[in-house]
Length: 208
Ligand SMILES: [Zn+2]
Ligand SMILES: [Zn+2]
Image (cartoon, rainbow, N blue to C red):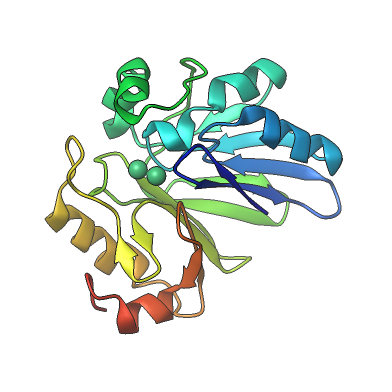
């Protein structure tokens, strides 16, 4: 389920296990009360939070979620985005959006596997370019990848933010995303979803 949060309509995801009702929230950028309401309405138990990168529209609601669910662990992004997580107040001023406060997270490494559900795991793909510590989370069992702001339907992430780099982004998309099976569903941080095959054949910025 996708919930648009913040004025940037960042698509926060709730991934839930149908039998156990365990849930993982991906990129809670803000509007934490809306996310909490959705979890409660569906009777879900939040187990973990995944963060694709350190931009405030992806992490701004994390502190508020942890205040409500203190036992929940936060995984990601890669440590190279630490400079963003330590400057959330400045980001709030720059983006003009709310910041629910700083939080502890477990930085993840390339190819690390997070076994968050009994029958589904998330492999970390370090994909610098939009930010240096940006990661994607690939779930092979369910055939999808969470890409944050690395790749969009017919577009790619901006590289004009601090420490963004187009060559890195192009390399990340080509070597880490376009090498996944073409049927893989791509869940993007904005602008909806796509597939690896669709972008490989028609993305105007990075061709497969
Ligand atoms: Zn971003
Ligand atoms: Zn974003």
